[in-house]
Image 1 (spheres, rainbow, N blue to C red):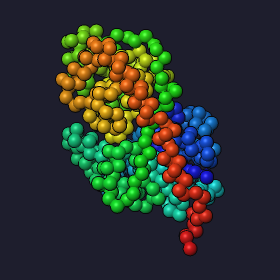
Image 2 (cartoon, rainbow, N blue to C red; image 1 turned 90 degrees about the horizontal axis):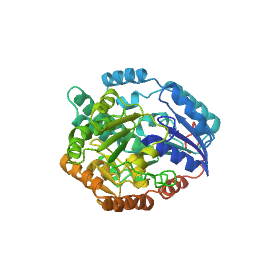
Image 3 (cartoon, rainbow, N blue to C red; image 1 turned 90 degrees about the vertical axis):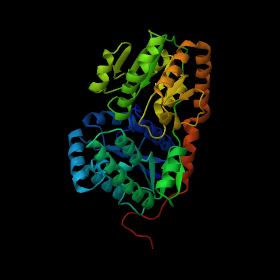
Image 4 (cartoon, one colour; image 1 turned 60 degrees about the vertical axis):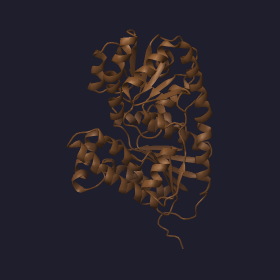
Amino acid sequence: MRIFFVCRRVPFPSDRGDKIATFSQIRHLSAEHEVHVFCLGDGLRDLDNIPGLERYTKSVTAAPVRPLTIKLRALKALLAGRPISVAALNEKKLHAVIRQKFDELHPDLIIVYSCNVAQFAEHFEYVPRIMLFGDLDSLKWRQYAARSRWPLKWIYAIEEQRLLAYERKIARTFSRAVVHTDVEKRDFERLIPGVPVSLVGNGVDLDYFCSRSEVKQPATIVFTGVMDYRPNVDAVEWFCSEVLPVVQKEIPAANFIICGNRPVRAVRSLAKQRGVTVTGWVPDTRPYLARSEIFVAPLRIARGVQNKVLEALAMGLPCVSSVAAGRGTVIPHGEGILATDDPEEFAQHVIRLLQDGRWRGEMANQARAAAEASYCWEAQLAELDRIVATFGRQDIRQGAAPD
């Protein structure tokens, strides 16, 4: 089949949540289908990532959008009564090129990842369209509102309502809706009743994220993630404020590594705290995971699967997480992962894992086993293959309504 795949940014390298999912899906689909990728981009620099992705696709078309442009569009959308996160990405160049390529290539199927770019496929109603929601983003804005003060609290609450209305529209007009987790599926069925929804889980590259028996640095705790993303910033600030000091009272040598690209000022300032290291961009997170003894995911704002958790588990790292971050996995509490929102209990889990080498080793083995059992990409994407196969080759094309 000839497939148009639409996503937010150039999905290469796979170094953040949405890019991990989209790259894995595109690479998998390209083995059997002709895949053309259309995306926006994180500024002009994102265009440098296109050659790496082209090895797996028939073509890649990107229309970079500047952060200032996004902010201006967001402000206009707020005043105009439109969903901010959709209007902010309304890039005319991408609309135009998709229409042009549609007329030239006549795709059999359009797949969209993330509802905020569904707008680029809305007009092609005579071709099957799969909406990969991943998560319901409207619920993320609800979480933002709950942890913000006025006026942001008010803005985020408005965005939740507007975006949910848009998600409902897209779910009811596209051919198929897909989410990542059972939790998201239940939320979808509650908020968008009457619309069938399928489940295509996330996975992890088990060959790439694999421990090579590296020497561990004693009492080392690690967190990975893009560090200008609000949930990640909130997570490390909370951990450094509420948990790490408790751990260091018991284990003075305990150190915390914050490993991720684009750390904002609030994150960089955490490096002034005893035992905290902020790496900034690194070419490969695996050495940091391999040398650490445990992984923490103290995300208080979290939806769906946390790829960072899957990568840590695959590396054989015991994980202590928030309830929200842990809920995105199918792994039972105590079998490689421990979940709590209480800072004292969180600290005690960390302390015990750092002090009890035998238990830490057992948890490490369970972590890797859980990743192998539940998060192999090929097993996860088999469901995507089944969904794609239900459409087959279509005879209806843009501009020709069905008889």
